[in-house]
Image 1 (cartoon, rainbow, N blue to C red):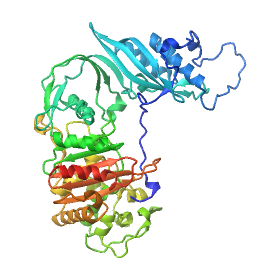
Image 2 (cartoon, helix red, strand yellow):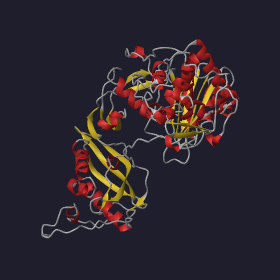
Image 3 (cartoon, rainbow, N blue to C red):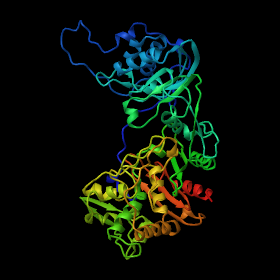
Image 4 (cartoon, rainbow, N blue to C red):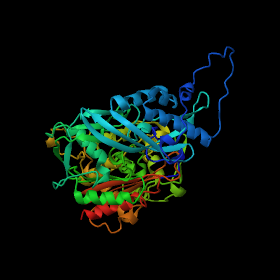
Length: 559
């Protein structure tokens, strides 16, 4: 990917989740070690002094928080929460209304009682704490324990120190709009099986925790189980928009699980888990091009399934789709001469290649293999604004939001853009967004010649209709596209990673610039025989060096 920062990915703003990851000192002992403030907590809720008859300009406190301000504010909040004094606890935050609602629900809806909050060592303005309590529902009780954290901030209106409110303060799995509820589970539990009949658990395969949540939500009522009683996170509107599933926090009484069989390979899943565990923020997906069956999905980051639900600029791996478009339109041919200048200006933006290289007198194959940005953007003036969108949708089945995988997924986005943004989208930046599932599917489509929607649970289980693509590439275009990917795997930017991967292979690397990151996200997508895989390692560097070894190792495992 080039060094063009102006086409960098714009990251979505999401609620901060701080539970369990921060260290801070409020004293090192329990709440009892604090000198309690009594009624002072309620007096500091920001209400005006009735005796102040003369209007005056309030001074707003600024500057870093002192240790005393952090300690005292955390003390007020934790002490009041532990005592069940919701109004006082909420007044110690910078969002009294939201805090009141969630803390009230903690007792009345979640049925958590006898709460003990124990702070840990302070680091700056951050304070971790341990929560212990008892969940009691209809005569059944069970102990509850977890770690959370709070951050003290200056309130915008007057600079007074307050706990920066986030639902994650109450429980680290909570996002904006989510609630904690104890009661009969909305859906029965499920026992998920791999393709060989073995049980899939989050203990054995940590990456599968959000997948198992999704399977329960989709198939719990259909798989023949009966619901138990549990404390769970019930997702709100914002979380549902991100396709997050409800999450069990504590099981008070077991239900009877139904059984759901998946397409996952235990051997491939275990290998994928090992591969991503060696890197921070890595994700990978492996599938079968001939059927669309997903064989493995793994993420090094827990809690969110980036491999299925991530929305990231795919960088130069997008050039697989763009190359198919240019070849179909007669704007490029694998073995014909094709321009790869140092720079190309389009829509008022000056684009360049990585390290400002150029290829003089080279072919389109050479430009694809070396990932020449200008070779693609130079064709933008000859394209319609919606050409790339139509190609992604009609041939590769992307950007239609209609995949029925069996669990929540993001199905890629290739919006219609114009001018410079359209040029940037040709090289996987601009507004284009993908994840490893999407890009593994792209390689699978090239390998098989037809888009087959990936799936984790066979459609015959519940009568789902899988997504299809409107058309396929011509035999000539497909042959050239395979030639480009094969050449890249042998002699291009993917060669080092694919060394030792024998047989019918093809690959493409990618690097995507992201605002605020010193290093780009590294992408890699490839196929070998009846396997296709794609991976991303965020903020790590070029795809051939970061995601490439992960993908190549899994392709080798396939035999």
